[in-house]
Image 1: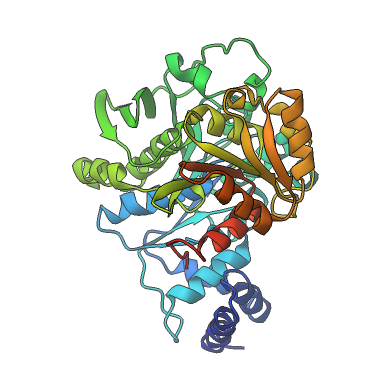
Image 2: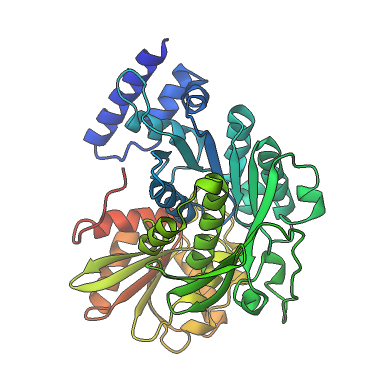
Length: 427
């Protein structure tokens, strides 16, 4: 089948899927890849500034959104998989939504969030010019296995990269001689100052009483999160220090901002307009479900995605529960990971004073048991997400709300909240 025909079929499938009430984010991509196995590869090969891959355990969606907006501030037309569907079929579906009927994509560069395993397959076909590697932490162990295996997957992505690899220097698996020693692309880094290390534990640091200072193997090109004051951060790079007031919330998003800025510095090189890029960074808003505020009855209801010990810990550490009603929704669908034992590696002490109003999701009772062992009180458990959300909104009436939720729970809750509030559709 010709490319034009496969595009037309894919667009038709996307249209039908959306008419039937689905987002159509992955199905059209699956169909078009069946018709044309090289569809994604051929489409991306034509972009004048090539492809960028963003991968790692935590932070991919928000960081990708940041990178897109920073590059757009530099005048580039950017294609991205904005729904966060980070398998190859998700990229194919995103291409279908941006192409015209003749398969023409109006973009200068592609910035793609990729699942660690699928990033390998794409990288070996497309050869990204730049890759940003955020971290390696325990996540979906039933699918990825131990984190050393995940690091090996990311190493294959880095090996396929042609121009520049940007790594989190505070992750020992990414900034080891074993990882970067055989890379042919230039390697640069981002991370936090030694005084902030305690706030950003790596997977290995989680059970440590103290975190050792880290010495970077890279001395020539580093972007550093020097300090944090509320939602303001100070960045240091090239001997400069810049203050940026961010709109995104949470410690994890502040580190994401540093990684995004480091990557865009590499991509733009001497053509960078720093003033415009820093201004764009200050205006980035949270990606859907990643600290996103949805206004319900005039008060914020904040969705915090949690999917592994590191992410949940940083989420709890980032937000003061005082004055907020809290719900936790834990699913164990394939996209969440089936093994929920990681909940026992999260400390919930910060929730002790205020407690939790509602626990829901298919693994709600597992979550309830975990809270009991941490002496955190809770009012109610309902494994049905619709009923759980209804209970929560009723019991927490008149209070700002915060929901910590796994991926599929977050998507379901967004749909339910969309029935009573203005929830931005992600196309």
